[in-house]
Image (cartoon, rainbow, N blue to C red; front, side):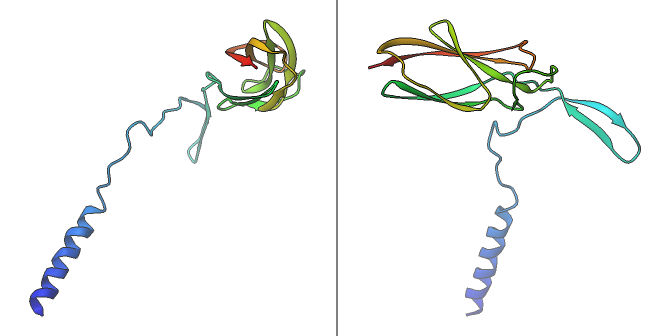
Length: 143
């Protein structure tokens, strides 16, 4: 019986030693550059220098409609007009090279496209309509 208890305690010690050194997944860390805005002895105020540099677009074609969902990191959708604020703005939607609408939300529907192939482009712009140099385009086939 004593031998069983001793083996059980040794087994628990081995298992408890393994839980502290867990491997970390590769690529899960990200680095965001910061700019020191104001420094004092008690706190340092920082702001991110990261501007929207990528747009992730998911789309689904159903009938003659395209359901579009966009994700832009560190970006807030605002109405057109006002001052140029970094990280704020809206999107302009183009179908076959023609501007069809201005969008102020991350998800929207392009309705009633004719049958055939179409080229869709989304351009992200500031509140004052200046360009972010951030665009995404793709082709769809309406059947």
